Length: 430
Image (cartoon, rainbow, N blue to C red; front, side, top):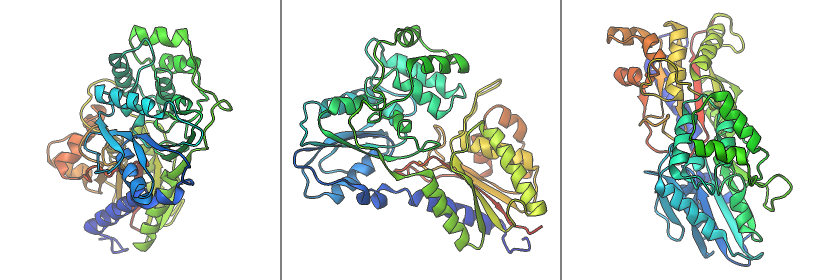
């Protein structure tokens, strides 16, 4: 136990409490109702997609019990909740499937033929890009699946991935809103992207798209993502651009939950635990393992010199990093556990430093954990178990290491998604 009285059990409890506070701050059941527009004189059609789409629909039903809501939303398998009037379809994520394709077609059909008296409420959250997978004319679901797999392993940022997806879609990049004209379209979104750009969240099905076919081609060329010939031909043909800013009649999207809101809730939880919080930023990007190295360097500076904040403290950050698969592997793990393993390797067992990182949707990558916790003994315990932390990092098998140590954080589906939350606790004063 350090001079601050924080031992391993206390540090773990604080970190998990901080992470849970961040997730709770983005709960649609708490935040959605205050952002609803005026009730319409005509019909109210509800459409949506994302990991939070079902719980957002349920929250809307609770807030408007006197409105004849109708419509359909698509969410990830295992993320459905009971609804009374709005249909919920489950589909695959992060690689799309036929259920998502059919669901996206249902959304388009639901908004066609409306009048100016009607209101479309679009409920959009992270995951919608994969869940609403309706290929553009001339492309197939198999083409979209191949592109998703290639982009996920390419190191492309979420903004770059979604720029490509919008130009391969019949619903994304504002096309859903265009189909709803002349009805009023109001978008309620939960941001899971750096910068909170509504055009990037879920690939912006109701938001004008500033990107172009040329940009999509450039992203594929830069990342080297191998995609089907039909996709290359479609992007080169560039027959029909997505709706551009100034040419799409839709209300400005309303962000009901964002990474910064979650980080502020986490900071309040840290203060309640007697720590000084410092938010490093809500939009950190880059390679996961490299960010882990950077965070380790900042933590070491805090412990040694009290810069940029004096301990006991908590360094908080959000955003979405990437994992570029190179060399041997891949093993199991997502961007959060890879970031943490990079941090642990860089810290080399430094005392008085703990960390947590997790995806606020409860799923880091494709595995059953939100993330993990690093302690001062992580490397020693791993080696005692016969594990080589650096080799596992090179094989992108961070899940395997933290699973063996019992340090994975499992929350189950949280039904929200404001991207990743990272917290580094430094307990000892310099």
